[in-house]
Length: 226
Image (tube, rainbow, N blue to C red; front, side):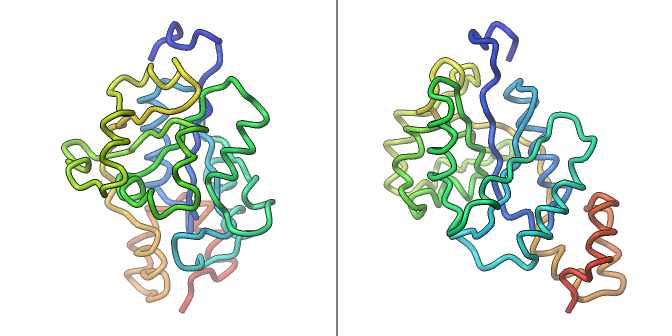
């Protein structure tokens, strides 16, 4: 996306949420892929304090926030937004988008979701309001026919709101769904936590998946140990 695609001179505000428990190479690679595909200068990482759609995180909010700061330190194009960590109660995405929209009525906002998260969107709190506040960029592996297995509530939404052109995400402030092709990253935070808990060679095998500063932090605080 070239500069002419941003008529206001401002990039869309691109948000990638998650528990980041712990933040790993897959998270960072996804953020980099999205930033490149959308032609924006930064992607904001938004860690959830109290995620409503999954079991409680293995590390506290304080530790997860600290690891995320370490992981992106000096990394071009990735920034941290800790508003959900500062907000009490469940970390509902719609509340975050509403807060950002109230602060800037005209700027385009793009929420990045993995293919599985997008399929599960109808289970989210006030999910039908999300496209009133932001666009959605669905991060999918090349060739992933994720749209062939959409739940019924998403079928019409997908047909009416989808676009293949990322420039459409700046033509309006919200309301479109765009697929972003990403590099496959076969790594999961749950597998990393399990390997660290088992210790020994399995623990060492996942070390390259974490930024050195994050690995050192986990070791220093004995996070995820059995």
